[in-house]
Image (cartoon, rainbow, N blue to C red; front, top):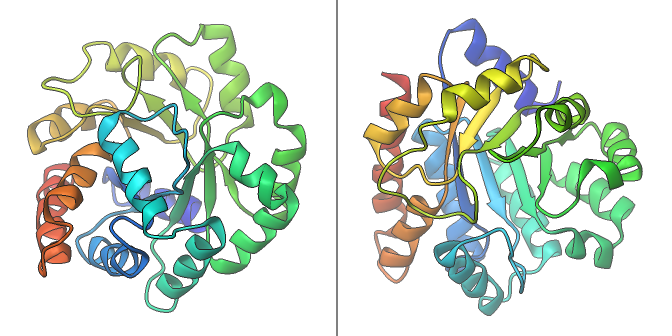
Length: 265
């Protein structure tokens, strides 16, 4: 069974909510990414999203854009990201999702990238700029490789289209709780309950809510209406602040543990 599917099944059985952490691969370098992945697994993260650095990350706000830039500057490429996943797999079975833009897969070769990712130990992809209507070949290749196809639903997605999107997704549905790009916010959206109810009318897949969630109080608020909470920019910001510090990994892990505890307790 796919690790993502398995983890959400375990969470459901234990009546717990999940925590999804996003970090930029190669920020500040790939060895740090490997160490952070292992530390976040130990901190209780249920799914790890690795952002594959790209020169034009259109769905990302400034914090994650700068992380992508640092990743590129450290020499991070898609093949090196897969090598890092394989290195993580030697010590951890944390479910891993690649947060990626389609241009990189197209350049690499879609079928080859999916096969190589599966061999490395990736469990699913979240492609930011590939709409479901253009995804037939991609979905077929992902099914063959046993990988989850994770799709986004936005606050502006019409109800009819929500139904079409979620029927094609596997693993979990990522609900983008705000319009616009990724980034920390001072308060969570007040339409999360309404929108997650709309999504649940069309699917039994777990719903992970992200975009703008940055502290334990917000995590607890969102957890009331989601199967999982996604935090990205707030973690990436910690990496930016402590990237040159000898205790980078422990500092980031301590911050993430505070968020995980807010979900689990």
